[in-house]
Length: 186
Length: 186
Ligand SMILES: Cc1cn([C@H]2C[C@H](O)[C@@H](COP(=O)(O)OP(=O)(O)O[C@H]3O[C@H](CO)[C@@H](O)[C@H](O)[C@H]3O)O2)c(=O)[nH]c1=O
Ligand SMILES: Cc1cn([C@H]2C[C@H](O)[C@@H](COP(=O)(O)OP(=O)(O)O[C@H]3O[C@H](CO)[C@@H](O)[C@H](O)[C@H]3O)O2)c(=O)[nH]c1=O
Image (tube, rainbow over all chains, first blue to last red; front, side, top):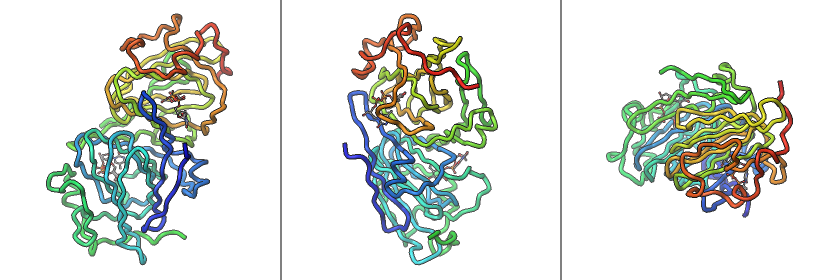
């Protein structure tokens, strides 16, 4: 029972958190966010005020790529997802990509300005995340097309077979047209 | 799209929160906890520091009845559960019971000292909750037997057919033997 561990990634500030999941005949239990332990392991004390859950009926559902102006702590409560992140902040890491499979054991801290997206790998995947500002319907932020050819995210399920919202399918620009988000805080 | 609403119950301080769930072809999306809106609707500004998720493989999995010394905000991220709460605080509401079905649309705020329990109504039910103190393995608190005959919770699935932990099956006393938790704060 090894506790948690935290790993840096090629996207500055984006952290992978390996969770301590306790399995028994009922199923499993995890401390999905635990302020004290996670901060001691280097996760920012980001002060979540909102918890969102998106339930996805079918494997292959794809959401993103959204770089809202708040930090996120993302994970799954059931199922599995392929997670992909693209740095959309002004600076030398603009366009940097990181992907990892989100299982019950893996959470990711996503700093504001980094584009967030995922594709579910199982039916009935529940995606849960904490954010440190209240959502505003009129918030303006960068977004990126899921099929951007420069970034070329290797989606496990072809986007043509995927359930995607009309907004994500049509409204999000390619990398060259993205207006970068403010540079990262140091 | 009516926003949220909050309802009181026979257990003082225990609140049912009807969430605004947005459905579309991908599945659904909800603000499961939104500090500003919920506090405006009368939910205590309880300051969560930990988010726990318990995944339950089979319908009929039953957990409880635990009255930890911290507040909880409970809901589901997939599946459905029958939720049951028993007031274990010293005072005139000691032994009061409330039950409600936890669907994606329904969350419950559980004040400290109220016994918390649930039984899953579907396979692959993910139960998620926020608490305002970090869990301590040595925390002492009241617990109650799931089959207590006084409280007589009408479990939809007989406990004999249910997956229950050894601890919940054997260690929790009947109502008459419960050492009450401190009275509620006013
Ligand atoms: C993000 C958000 C959305 N909504 C509403 C607006 C819509 O009616 C509905 C779904 O919103 P959409 O914008 O389509 O959500 P979705 O495409 O899933 O994207 C959001 O949720 C994703 C996870 O599901 C995140 O990765 C994205 O960053 C986030 O923007 O929920 C809220 O009421 N509150 C929110 O916080
Ligand atoms: C509550 C809690 C438990 N644990 C560990 C201890 C065990 O190895 C494992 C499961 O703990 P158990 O005590 O069996 O959890 P469970 O019976 O599900 O009961 C807890 O979780 C229930 C929801 O699953 C709550 O309704 C209860 O109030 C809570 O006590 O997780 C943690 O690491 N952190 C925690 O916060």
